[in-house]
Image 1 (cartoon, one colour):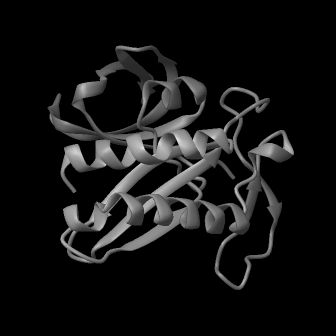
Image 2 (cartoon, rainbow, N blue to C red):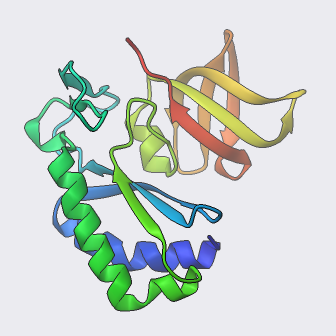
Length: 184
């Protein structure tokens, strides 16, 4: 999906979802499958910074999902949340004619970010300082593109990781993808 279309989708859905206490973590588009994936979370009202989601129900549901919570009940993304957001976003996108920009029909998938949550915005990195992160850069740095280590600092300009005992600093524009590494 073009960056412009992603920006238009975000501009259309963010105010509505934020009003209902949801945060859009990431929007992905799979052009061949004509699928838009929307990862949502609850706004972290009183979750401790960097706190990992906690498993609420150890058994997987029939849909193959598990329920996770932060330190407060408001941070749980439930199946009902995903259904509600799917309906809200579908109504917005259908009403705004976004299907035309995607070349016809598409499938909308809404889910929680999961334990390996994508880190996209500076506030995502800042929220999870102290956690282990896996990061891929757009270009080779010192002969490699993949890094995994402790997130030691994050500000508006860069991310600091400790990788194999060595400090690394990454400007946001060199980061291709970053995710939390689940801790069990």
